Each structure stands twice: as structure tokens, then as C-alpha cells.
Length: 538
Image (cartoon, rainbow, N blue to C red; front, side):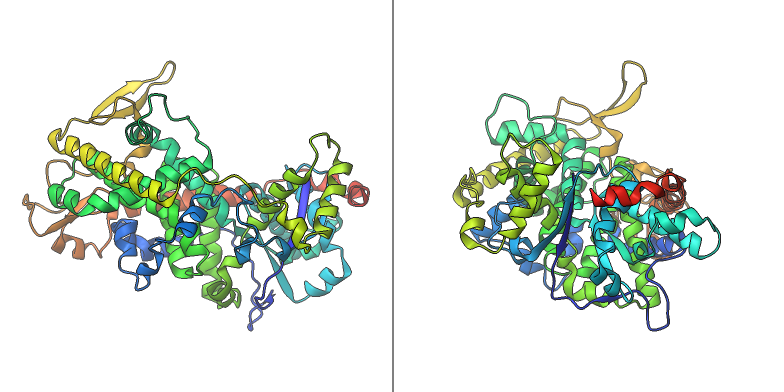
């Protein structure tokens, strides 16, 4: 089933063209030249952990949450109907159902069929003569709508003059703007961190909760959120004493878990709950770039591309001074796919288990939409189950986690250089790392950014500048990536790590080319123009 929803907003309409008649879509697609400049811009930010960077923001103190209701709300951020009556961007009555149709969203054809349910409306056609509709989506939605836009761009430029495309891809599709779905960024990056560092969180889970059974290989979102929250808050309680003790250590075990707790965990926790929902656009953009570097080293092959597509679009709009940038600065939190997830959740709760046909499900969806303004009706969907932990419980768990961290880092301190590398695998041998205190293995994806570059951080000297001959460990720093530099050397290098910059720049070129090629792939678009109207009517 495909659910087509409009989410209302007080934001002004976004025009298709700038004042200089430049269109909102970049004809270069995912623009590697723009992205290389973005990479250059953010290298100094990447040199620091997310927590270190956040501490320099003037409003960082606003992100400190002590209210129990707000804490619980953030811990249930992916329980989509948990607070339908409280948050503006989560209100049920802010959405309008266009239609719910029996359709698998598995290719470009399907997405255009779904889009046609509203693109063919006279009101929409009139609106789209001048304005655009942002389309926040996860990977498939972005890929297939972008592919349709790319095909239409080529046709209008005369590089693909095929008459079949005129009827199969409506011109109004050009006025849909695929937008990185922030809710799924939050969900997927949190899950990714949990999976890559499962051995650590399993160990922490058993100690803090006094459990004998293993943590599930892929825990439910609410438990992932809880463990990440405890890991972060517990880390804050003991951060200073750990940093003081390890100083400029480049021990691979220390920098790996410092990166996890000071960089990966807080950035995944903040990206949606704090930055996106509070309209901090510039910080949101820089953190998306940070998360892209993480997904790249995790080799998450879809998210490492759509994050680049988002960054390319944003900086293209800045370059041409498109009005959408002003809208994003003031109404970022309206570009959210949450209403769709919320609606699906409510529909599941409303639908009888015996409902098995698309026609019956569509009937229920239309009824649900019709009643969305009735308070008693909406009230019936509010959950009755409470969160399993109170604020007092959480505070106690945070303290237990802090003690766990102290013991964990104390063991790392007592066992420098004891990380073991082993080749394991039944058919294909791969590198796995064993860190002091944890019996389970970690893949190389867990290592900091510097260990994915061609020049690994040196364990025997501070400075990783190739031309440096100074063996001293004074007047220097160890960056978040694991590489270290003397202050004078770092300034000489333009305040960026050249090894990681090369790795990221090469990644940008590779992924941009790959995604652009994928956008231009021929599908079955030319084969289904004649059956489009029949599918639309159904």
C-alpha cells in the first residue's frame, strides 16, 4: 500500500526559480565539485569530536535536558504515535490524506503512479506552476523520484528526446524536491552504531542491568535509544578524569572508544531530537556531513550516497541563493517524514486484524482521515503503556553506566597496545579486532576515520605529517580521526588532516559518480505509459 499525505505548514511557498531564473534542481545531479569544497570547509570541524564541537556553540546549554517528560519523549522518538497530542510537528490533525492506494513502491514507475494521485489535481497543477513541494523520504523514495526528475531534465534539455517520456513522466514531477528524511537518518545511524559496536553495548548492557543473557543482535529502537542515552550521559560524568589520564594517547583501543562515546553516540542522538527539531540549520548540515563520514566508513551503501545528495543540494541552493535556504533556516523542522510514520502507526492500531485487502485498508485510511479533527477519536489512539523507567530510574542507571565507563577505561589504561588483530571467517578471511576487556570481536568498521585512510595513525610518534622529523610529544594534539600533529605542523597543513581529507575526497568522487549513474539508469519507464491511467483510477 502507498499512503500519500500532505503535511500542512505555516512556511511560505517555495518558488521553483530564483530571482535570476535558476531552477531548484542542479543539472549536475550530485555535484562532486561542490562536495569537495564542502569537505574542505568541514575538515576543521571533523578534527574535533562532536561533543567538542558542540561545546563551542553559543546555545549548546539549551540542549541540556532535565525535564522528565522531555527525556522520555526523546527516548521514544521512534515510537511514532507516543505523543500525538503534544508536539506540533507530531499532531495528527496537521496532515491531510490524499489517498491510500494498493501499490508496491519498488521502482520509479510505482513512485510516479503514487505521485500522480496529487499531481493531477487541478489545485496542485496550478500551485506547481510557480512553486515546489518538498518530499522528505528515505533512500528508495529519494532514488526513484530523483531518477524521474533526472530523466525529465534530460528530456527538456534535448539529450533524451523520447516522446514516450512525455506521457510517462509528468512535467509536474520537476516540482517535487526530494529531501533527506531526518527521522530515518536518526533511526538508521543509531541502529548502525549499535550494530557495529554491538560487542561493547552487549558488555555494557550485562554489567549495568545485571543481565546474563546477551543483548539482541538488533535491539528494538526504544532499547537502542536507552543504551545510547545511558552511554552518553554516563560518559559525561567521568569525561574529564578520563581525558586527563589518557592525555595525548594514540592507543588504538582508547581512540576507538573515545570516538564512539564522544563523537558517534552524541551526534546520532542530537541530529533529529535537537538540531533538526530546533531549527539549527547550519549545525544540522555540519552534523549530517559528520554522519556521512561515519556511514562511509561503516560501508552503509545507500546512506553514504543520499547524505551526499542532500549536502550537494543544500550547497547548490546556497550557491545560487535559492529562496528555499531562507525557508530551511526558519522552518527546517517541517521538512519531516514523521507524519507518514505516525499515520501508518495509527492506521495499524485502528485497523482490524481481519482486514486483508487493499480496498478495506483504503476505506479505513479514509475514515481515519475524516475523523482526525475529532478530539475523542484522536484520544482513543493515545497509548496506555508507560515507559518502563522513571527519571529516578534513569538517573541511577546513568550512575551505574558511569562506573562501568570508569572500569572499562581503567582496563584500557592498564593494557596499552594489547589490541589484537585476527583474520577470521569460514570462507573469506577478514580482519577483526579484540580490545582489552571485551571477549567479542569488532570489525574494522569500528576504527576511527584515520584507520580508513591510506596512512594510518602512527602509534610510535605523535605527528603524522609526512615531512615532520620531530619525534617529540609536546605542543601537539591527537585529532578525532586518530591522527596526531604538532601545532606548527597542523597549521602548515591548513588546519586539516591531509590523510583523511584524501580519503573523504576520493569517497566523494566515487560515490557521486556511482549515484549519478544510478539516477540515469534505464528502468521500465518507457514500457508502462499506456497502463498509467488504469492504475491511477484504481
